[in-house]
Image (cartoon, rainbow, N blue to C red; front, side, top):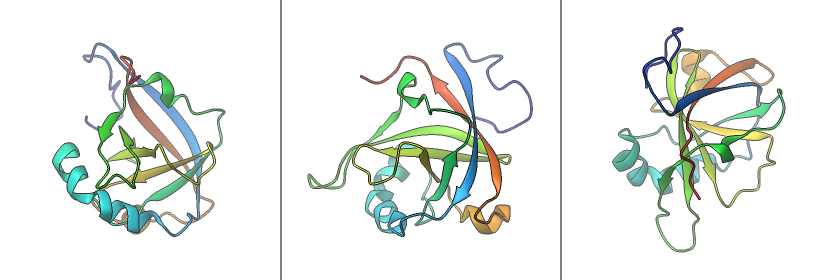
Length: 143
């Protein structure tokens, strides 16, 4: 995955880009705890150690259709935690992952984003900022 302004799918059969327009919102204050619990598996599967926290985005342009995409499965650290699906994406030119815990207290209109650094600081984001997230959607979806 490369985050550029070019058509990202020109040479990637079976991949399409979902564009999500959203607003940065305050999270529940629990993301860091859970990201740390899954950090080893994120590192093994996604190839990086995530910053211990998530950036929360409220979707503004309709319903999120990630169910049409094949997510990358992140196994839970213990039986008391749930499976997490990860989707490669770009936010303001930075490579990130949308994570979708199968057990969550967030509404379906909130997405959580992880990266190797604190996105709010590096990208200068604050609550209320409107952003576009491009999701690289593999269409051979997970069942």
